[in-house]
Image (cartoon, rainbow, N blue to C red):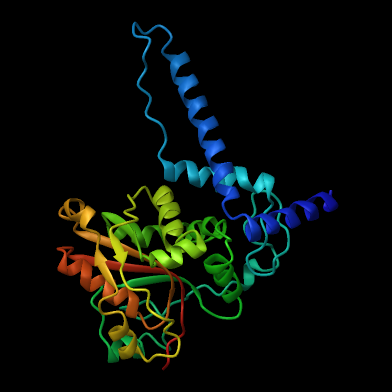
Length: 306
């Protein structure tokens, strides 16, 4: 049995490395079969209807994609632990050894961005004191450290799209009540430039937002924001330099102007939060477009510099 799992694991890595589009073919087949079964079930239940044409409301693409990556794909390609990489049994998302070691963000946290702070008397982290933010408040799942860095790198650069399921479920189990309390009208992923999207094949923040949309039953507007400038990496830049670098890098999608008119509260979704420059620029753009309240959520967040 173990030999079979090892062979499947090698095949999965080969597919992820050489043929990242293979998952799309599997998904299309799954969607076709699923929709056919829905249509057949609905038709049988309405066999006594006078009309031979039955209107069927098929599941949304986000729901089908979630079911595919969550329940179908792990049968073909077993999951690996996002921390240590060991093969996991079907239905598990992290191994029993690594689960207690996951660096969840704990209270007290910054009232603005959600970074951990040293005491409850310290209301804001260093970055938010020096550069006040425009969004209302933020939440984060993990600290960005040696435990989470490999998983985030794999999720962002190595086609490990299935990690979106793990992150979304963890976010839902720990912060669903906090998110729903903010009453967001839509979830909006932070966009990446079209050039990077072509190279990677996906936007990791968009995958996460779509999975959260299914779990939280909140609509996801994947293309509300556009990234118009492919800025260089900002790791070496100071906070103010990052803001200046991103000043004209984003815009509201002209095709979504009508959709944004009725939106009052937005939850911005991104993978990693460091200084908050990207979230801040996106928040300013949404405010300028008429959105009143912007909240943020990031999978990983850096440690405060205090």
